[in-house]
Length: 221
Image (cartoon, rainbow, N blue to C red; front, side, top):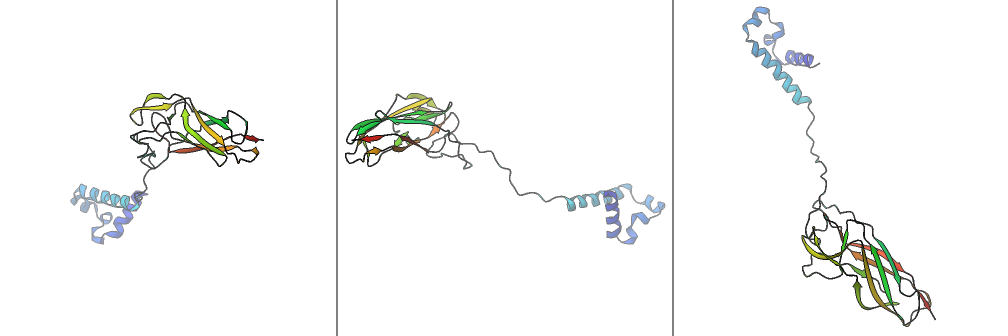
């Protein structure tokens, strides 16, 4: 097919006196052999350029790689893709299931952390390079009393922050004291709240996350 296209192009684009196909054998012998070869390869090169597909302007999708650095300065990857947030198991309950209005009680929260991940301590950092774990759980019935407490954290090297920090692996235990409002209505008064945390492993940090929980409570006479 290419030979026929080349012959057709050559015959239609050149004047009659230069049509090599109409020359006699003696006339052909007078033309250097490489001239005819160059002409044929020149036509082939032109046809290849003419029928070649146009270059594509689309860029291949790059695999996002999260930068290892401060969580607050770059919680996401350089490509803007979020790291997958691990699903925690949260078990919350009061140390008393039924109390009278005006009573004091303690909320106990147990957080199961997936293997390979860790949560940061509730202790704040002066460098502000990570967000401490905290609870957001209160209402007009459940009044906060005293500060949030945690089980003893581990002081370990964090490969993402590149320094030693206090963190929790495996599980994290939190305690928060409450006082029930004297005006609380009788009956079911469950507490709904959120665990606010950032989870990291040895390679990436997930964005700041809120995971809900609830603790059952009944106000008795």
